[in-house]
Image 1 (cartoon, helix red, strand yellow):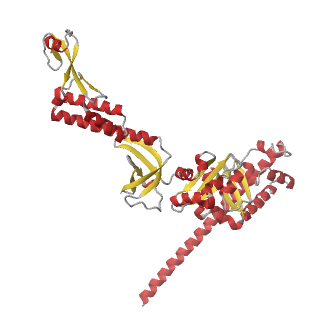
Image 2 (cartoon, rainbow, N blue to C red):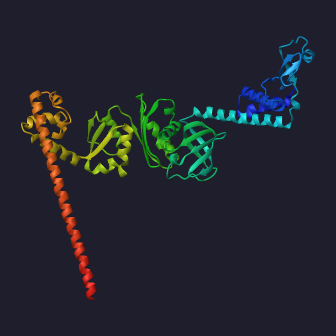
Image 3 (cartoon, rainbow, N blue to C red):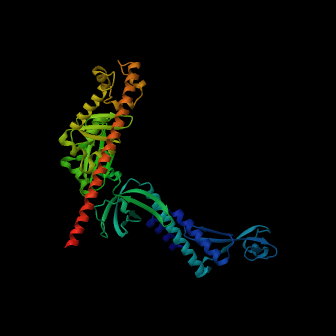
Length: 453
């Protein structure tokens, strides 16, 4: 009984987590390779491992012949019957070999095959483990930093946190420091499994909340949408089908304990938690908080929203460098145009006046068009007269008349705008040339004064 070999196989299987059947197959192939190295490269070898005893049996199959012409592949009938009395010419007989006679080179070959196969098996095992963990948060220890990319140890595996997936104002340059990150990809390359991590991905924020909020893990509260500008600010929309649960309150926690856990992990990133709403008007109002929303004009075809806010809250709604409205737009998936109340009222007034300027349009028709969502003459051209005719009380003939008048009005307005732009350009050129002439005359005058001195 080869107790040592059996113990080694069991130990490697246990320590490396490799299936024992894979190890045994590897061992048999390694011995077969060693046998070929020692006795020749023919494929007439059979190797079997006895899992109960730990013994390895090696047989070299030879053809039974009357006269041997190739000792590598043939055996005489006389020698064959010494091993098996029932042998006959033409049969193949397995001749047992002594593995101890393989020699140093054969043993080294067997060792190399075993080591390589163990590495391959361990590599495949690691890949199989992590390919199903995409979207999961892991803890890693920094091993090294290479051109801004961070290599982390996850235990048996290494992972890469690329510079592009790091939060800009965070510094992870201390060897041995622990980092939490999200697995966003796992692929098998020539060097082994490559596990890619991220701290900037929106799903990292979702996974952090799932770790802090049991209601999310249980499926009671759902994260509908996330919009992030990593390291600066994020918005997250949550919902629940349970009327007795406040999804926002569940994510915030008592005295903000749950959301603070996430904020601390993200090194102070501001997080707005808002309730999801099927009504896009209420949804955008929540998304733009803390700014108050007075009015929302919805264009479902273009998936755009015109949002009106109080004059003094315009900058609050837009946010620093447009961040608040930009994140709100990403969160709800609609384009958002924010206007203050004064500008909106002026636009309404100017648009209404443009309707009244159309020939054949009085206050009654203008009110009818305005209340149907056509706030200006330009708005009428975005649809055809057939669609205007569907307005109750307008009629087909009147609709065609109004649309034709709007077309002429807008074309004339465009010509006036073009003429005005041309006049402004000419004026700019005139004053620019005048300034150049004055500068040139001043330079000549200065040169003359110096000559006199």
